[in-house]
Image 1 (cartoon, rainbow, N blue to C red):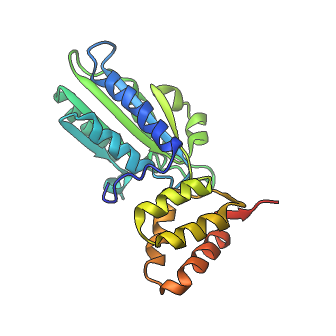
Image 2: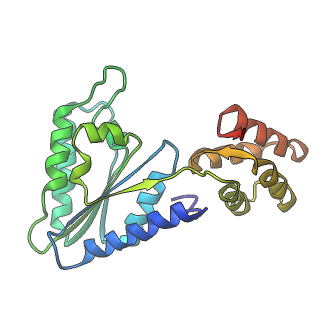
Image 3: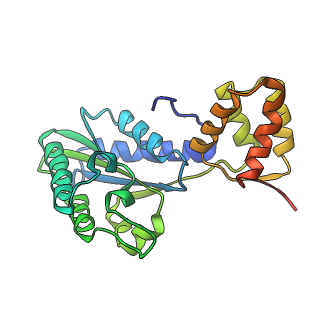
Length: 241
């Protein structure tokens, strides 16, 4: 959340609105005490930042992140034990939130083969469906860039709800991000938005912010042209036929 959340359009607001309803459900006294949310979308769409925002908004006193970054080099058994420990720690608190980031990396999924750790997958499936002890509330927020893979692994039905995180798709979306980041002045923003008006756009917010950081290092007179050409080179903006 270092850069905050840029609310660039209705798709972001919809995720936040739906997420808020699920947070209220998780905090409520009715139901099983377990609410699990899956945020799915293209790579670099900002899923982790939105998941972190929802975890922060929950106000739950115990928030734990379960990330593949922390388990590099772990054996399958060690990884399962670490995941189990995170859930056991969460059960001790009255209201807990677990953020499982990049779930396909956690289960060692590789598209060539394909390969994955069935042991880790089964452990996650069991824990995602297990209600916390009586009187305890548990919120689980997961992120993935490979929904279709998790569908085949029968993991999607384990979640209370699945929220789609979209890429930016219009010049208006782009305009809001450019205005918030101060990478370009107001005239440059108008110039970029007018030129993108006849283009089809598809770029993740994380990728776009990386490009804008690059543009800040360039001389002012070349930035707009370079930015537009970079979008076209990478296939993020294509002229409409």
